[in-house]
Amino acid sequence: MTVFGGQTAAVRARAVTPSHWPLSRWTLLTGTALALLLNLGGPTKGVAQDAVAERPLSAINWLTQSLDAPRSTPTALVPSPSSRDDISENALPEDVTSGPIDAPRIDAVGLLSTAQTGLPRDLWGASKALDLSRRLTSISQNTDLLPASRRLLNTLILAELDPPLGIQNDGRLFLARVDALLSQGLIEEADALMQRAGSDAPEVFRRSFDAKLLMGTENEACAQLKTTRGLSPALPTRIFCLARDGDWRAAALTLETSTALGLISIDDGNLLARFLDPELFEGEPALPIPDAPTPLTFTMMDAIGEPIPTQSLPLAFAQSDLRQTSGWKLRATAAERLARVGALTPNRWLGIWSEHLPAASGGIWDRIEALQRFETALNTGDPNGVSHSLGRVWTEMGESGLQIVFADLFAQKLSDAPLAGEAADVAFEVALLSPSYEIIAANWDKPLSKNAAFARDIALGEAPSERIFEARKRAIVDGFRNTGIPVRLSGLVQSNRLGEAILRAIELLEGGATGDLDELTDALQFFRAVGLEATARRAALEILLLERRG
Image (cartoon, rainbow, N blue to C red; front, side, top):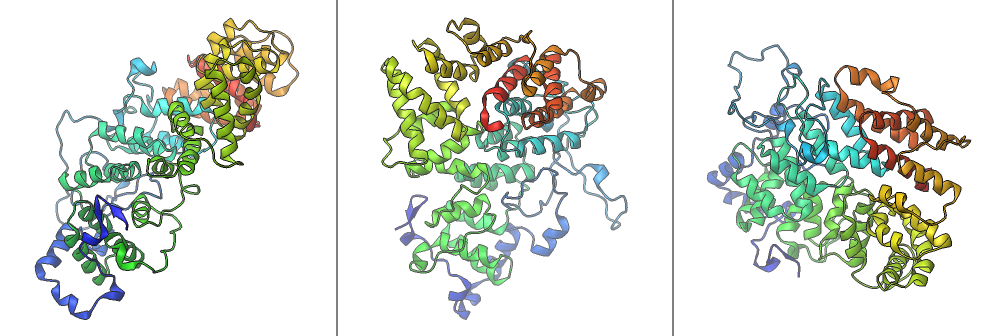
């Protein structure tokens, strides 16, 4: 028997799909019930389409349409005046928005202070919000960013920075930042950023609602919807929240009414009916999996016992697989996928992978077995066991893109272990990919190969003096030897658009990592010139050592 929200399906009020309705049931829809639907469920389809506000530049196409057009537009996140038509459509006065004079600037909201990031508050300078939003969106949608690029990008996204000069407080840049976090699977960070903003704007609520669905805190989302004035829930959202609030009768009545009036799609109606009473449909074929499910659809499909696999869905959906109610393989696979892109902490990844002994072989089980064998040897202080298991686990980490995660956890212990030969070489490579790369490199006293010695010089911020023949190494050395702002980025810096120049440099770094060596040199040179030394060093080391980057 399906259990959802603490209640069994047997105690729910029964919802009936159109194909099951007796005609006499329509007579039960009183004027009061119909008014309830129309007043609380938002405007009808035609009215909603007329009132839809300008779609944000960075809107994610899988977001739930949780709201109809708002009855009133909050102060923040309104379309900019330049986007509106200057021709009046009628003689009525325009709507006037208002807010407190000292209202916080939503584009300035962040989770990291300037003391934590070391970035100046006026980093965005004279850039246009549209240009910054486009760059943030473009970079964050790259699923194979260098870890150094991703760290810097997310620092910029989460930083408390003044909005660009002359910008209106319309929230365009804020939404682009939230969407960039969501596209990387950083749901908790996105949710925290939206909570810090404290905005009741519909476009913020849509993202907050979806984030809470994927985190499994949908009750909070529905409570926020219920207590926030000016938000008009779409019908599927209203029915879902009525059910979550325990008002199954109202949910069923709203579903029946909206379906009869043609205000809800057949697919949504079928899913909601099963969500309200799955027992009514026992033995019937499963619903087809939607091509592009929203978090609301995803949540309800899971609730009726027909979960949608997340492997082909955006990263944000994988967070739902981490719940304790999921099977271990599902959780381990999601942990691998999220940790690979920095959307899961190394310790949590390790904890999930250490929960049980693998009961099978092949694929992820081989990676888990190699990790557990290595960790056991390391924790028991067995040098021979570490030496024999290190090479294999490092190869497994490389094939799954988890080298950085592994290095964060084990670099310091490996650097202290009495290793020699090939095992020592691997330990040094692990160290160079960890946050302690500089300290460990400076104190390393074991023999180094020529390639390892080159990497140590980069870790210490030194350009090797000998002549370099390999093109990629030469491009890195040039980036460390050259000084000043590269020509292709100087215009942005000189026009007071330093933050935008940093985003552009991330784009150049990614181009360099995939083969454009001129862009690689310019990116490294730029980062060093503006004081982002750690980014330059770690990016260079990652390009040298992460073979999957090619």
